[in-house]
Length: 355
Image (cartoon, rainbow, N blue to C red; front, side, top):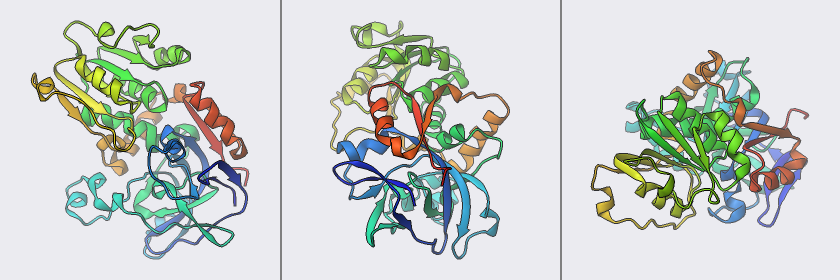
């Protein structure tokens, strides 16, 4: 079976990966396409610890092809996207509608992958860069057959993260002036989300000038790079920004962006910083009703929120296609990674449909 591994020294596309049959409450999903997110590269860059070898990938769309014991039979054959957040269904958080806080989402289940008889780890409980993966039943999100597969895959990570951050954490409304730092896949979704929820003005900031046209197409009113802005403070409106969606994970940008906010401003940490990162703020920086908010996969229950987003796309209320950049064969993964690092693409995809 085809899959993409981080070996600890290189990213490899292999054809001899094995995956076991699903056990109780687990299912096998044949992956159609999977999106390359910056988070998939965190093990590669050392931003997060990860045992190797590991099957990367966590943003995908596919079809349920095999069920383990105690799985609802109605899942068989369903088209799904996947979430990294499994839930147990019976803890206090699941019972109260906050299944994204379920502690099972921090567990490390047995990996279904192996190669040459040796175990291969599964990245963030998904390992979606493979022709087939095995996940918990609670990680399945049903999707309409008519939805573009590239958009369908993105819903499970970039889109739910950005839209959840904008609505649940930032509570963006019609009078808000929004700053989005980072115009990658998540940042561009954040711009679309801010516009969707009615922001009055959206400023995008990214290191790559090549992102300007794309950010404006997604709904930004202004775009800046380090070359065009002396500082974030120099591009802040009178009385400051109302909302900061920080999508890079760079602590200096988070601190600088936080300080550009006016009274009552809400800063949301969307991008994942390197482990051990500290943020130097004075407590008085929060004095005028400012808020600094974390955000894990949008801080929303994915099994309810993602279908809402899919329905909005289906009704024509949301257009996420500007974020879609390119789709390539799995053996071109290293070229796709290089393009992402150079800022040439927003969301690139790996196509596993030629099995």
